[in-house]
Image (cartoon, rainbow, N blue to C red; front, side, top):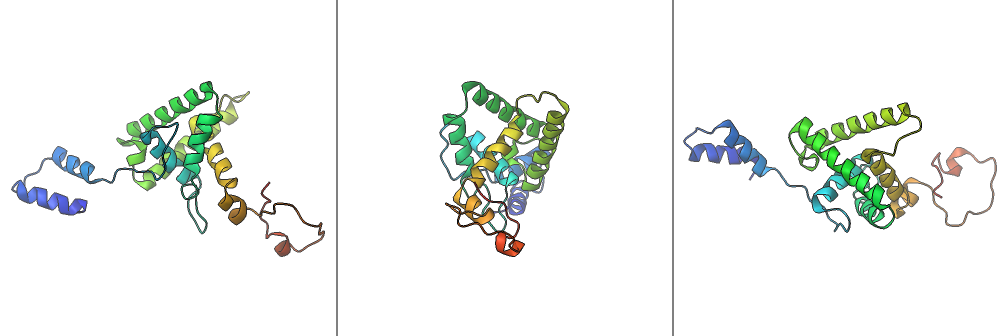
Length: 194
């Protein structure tokens, strides 16, 4: 049942009189809840769904799989658990919480529950603010949540099989040297995966 149908039925049952808060409750109840297709080991489910959406915005699916399709969110979760120090883990989680609270303040919903367009706009806004602040401060402060997530997303994607072989050029052991080749024969301008 879609939202429109739910509203019609509710209005019919109520005799045509439905208050604004009741309508909002119905619309909120009909909204799809964010889900993830992997099991987090460091993050909780809510945090994992936010990371999944942010990674999917940073590297979306195009003619090649994006961050979500290459399991980058699970990579981020594992990196946080196994590689990051306790201090960096705490800073990341605090930044994630602040990111979601800012989304709630700006849009009235958790980031994971926003419409995809609003999510993309919000990520761009927060990202651009973080980049501006990082450039303005010397020495650069510890990276904020959004830039840490971007860094981990790019690392996870470009070290995945898809990122290394379908987006970048990949040769496990470089072959013979061929100088003065036309660009078309030298990978069409793609950077080498290393």
